[in-house]
Image (tube, rainbow, N blue to C red; front, side, top):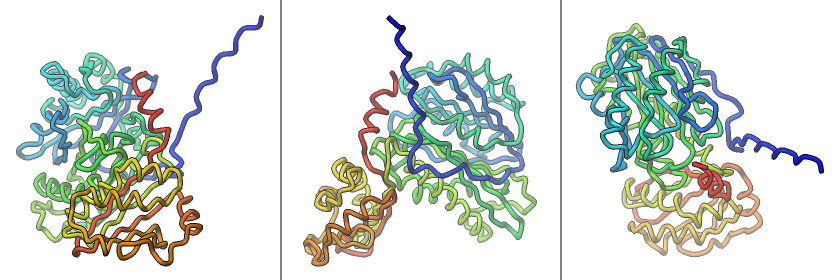
Length: 418
């Protein structure tokens, strides 16, 4: 009897919505990076990303609203109090170091100290981020052993983006340039995220760097506002993680007079460029939603307020019945009407309207007189969809991006730890 053939290895899966290539990101003066492997991840792959920053760097962060939180998010919140100085950032994949108590806090502190020793800075000036399995204490000894082998150099953005991935199927990056006082400033960012994605942050990490000279207080104000319009306006599955954060670093290497206040009009062009970068990264996360085959923009208007519109959009975007219908390319608009009603927001039933792309499904509280099942079915085969809803109350509006829910989502999450 011949020997049994070895099982074929699973082919690498990449989201069908993935960008064709990683973008060319602007170099950021004042930032160096390195990647390495501590062996925290179950596969043989880089799982550490270290960034070294100039002494003049100022930073700001926005963090998960999950009540459990994590040791690295707690560490960053403390480190960013005051002037917001930061000399480095250490990110690990493979272990979230969340729900780990005093042991996790101690491990976080030791990793910051180890990274600081490599950079030549205090541990308190190193920010931390972790992603991976919850409830496991970070093995900081492995991290400390790997760090001295990592050589800092000009940032290799694709390599850094890959090192922080977990269930992601492609690395995520975005960049832009702006002008302050006529001086060109650059912005480059990377992110990770695929599942456990919901508004009010998600299982995502995003790190954005600029060579602009901006105070920590101004960075924080701009970041909070632009995060609400980007990372807090996406959802894959409605689950909000314990480790989410967006960190923004300004190295002050660009030769312009420092911006000290968020009210400074010189911030206008920078704010516009930052908005573009954050929105791009957020949409890439939805594109990589676990098992996703459709990118969907849910637009709600006619609500009592923008906040009410956002709640309705989120309810529709997170409905398993809506998301599975989209996966099946079924324009089942009745499920959307159901989701509108259970959002517990003011609506006028007789004025509700639902449109898929240019095709009306319902108008004035009833099926549209121009409803065309064939045209609707053809539209649903697109990889990018737009669903517009009017609830007939006021002027409030909001947009949320989501994806479909496929069998692959169950496979990925069922096999995550096995």
